[in-house]
Amino acid sequence: MWKAVVTAAVAFALLLCQSSSLDNGLARTPPMGWLAWERFRCNVDCVDDPYNCISERLFMQMADRLAEDGWKELGYNYINIDDCWMSMDRDEQGNLYANKTRFPNGIKKLADYVHSKGLKLGIYLDFGTHTCGGYPGSIKYLQKDAETIAGWGIDMLKMDGCYANVSDMSWGYPDMEMYMNKTGRPILFSCSWPAYAGGIKVDYSVLGKHCNAWRNYDDIQDSWDSVTHIIDWFGDNQDVLAPAAGPGHWNDPDMLIVGDYSLSYEESKAQMAMWAILAAPLFMSNDLRSISPEARTILMNKEVIRISQDSLGMQGRRVIKGDNKIEVWLRDIEYSSYGIAFLNRRTDGMPYNFTLTLQDLNFTYLKGYHLDDLYSGQPLGHFELNRNLTVSMAPNGVVLIYAYPSE
Ligand SMILES: *[C@@H]1O[C@H](CO)[C@@H](O)[C@H](O)[C@H]1NC(C)=O
Ligand SMILES: *[C@@H]1O[C@H](CO)[C@@H](O)[C@H](O)[C@H]1NC(C)=O
Ligand SMILES: *[C@@H]1O[C@H](CO)[C@@H](O)[C@H](O)[C@H]1NC(C)=O
Image (cartoon, rainbow, N blue to C red; front, side, top):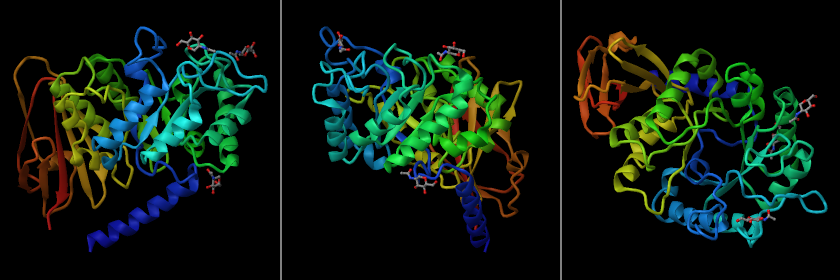
């Protein structure tokens, strides 16, 4: 019975979202894939560093890995070019084109290659006069650039906001969305607008009408400090951010850095869990050619991905932030279930035990819930609302639990 009621409520909620958000059919769940920036930056030195420079070879190799190593089957299907792919100038007709030394076959051929692997190709433009890396900006060429990328077969656009006036963004990003729509090609639109407009000082209902995702805040860097800085900001501003997210339109706390240099094993699990709770796009920025088995296992955890990709599309919230440096984050998921992340911000060296009851989290289903620990893979059993649940978290660690109503 409750399932039928829930399903009807969900259908109604989805209908509401659909009528008020960007209607290109894309990103019904948070998009997944790979994005070059955090790991490969603006490395254009293909002479001394041919293996890592921004080039068609890099993207073809990453596409091979996504397609052949099991990523694609899990949903990681976008491969995204970031800054520094362009030639320094437009051609005589004002069209953008890729650097011919580094992309000798051009972007259209690269898109064909990516599509032949069953993947989608994303590209990067900047709304202002120049990209952040100093390449040509799109402000005077929005329609032309929309037509160019659609002609190449691009599937996603990340539009950055360097060298632009924030006041121009309120017409510029919607215009770009309109021009892409006019091409007839569905292109997932990631807008960097709020990141430049002060994070929460934007009208998120307008954003949701024109963008499938948006970078809200600081760029992620390769450090746990950076990860927690972003998590804190999302928690502190959740009353603005959480209602803005839903099928077709997502807040984006930036890339997953699991598999890079800095995060420990526990920190890696924590970033992945928190990005799932936040209904964040899951764009890895790492080297898939040499990623460790541990990082791969974390990023490929099907149960964690299932939380991320839940069809309700509700962004989780920080519901407890204790003096003991333990946080509890809760995400509503389909069938009256929950993802619960216990995040340990302590660094005092030993695992920390934390106890609460489901009542403390305002769970209400009187028959109680079944709980599964998604990283250990172990069922934790049946919990009446007042039964004590004790979780043990490593320093900078997380315990991620799936809770579903008992029959
Ligand atoms: C293409 O990139 C190389 C660096 O890899 C650079 O030396 C060259 O000037 C670029 N060409 C254009 C036309 O921007
Ligand atoms: C921002 O606006 C000012 C005033 O209209 C203008 O002079 C300036 O060129 C603009 N800057 C950019 C990057 O568009
Ligand atoms: C363009 O917008 C219309 C109306 O919102 C929508 O139905 C259509 O699917 C969009 N087309 C593309 C290619 O995004």
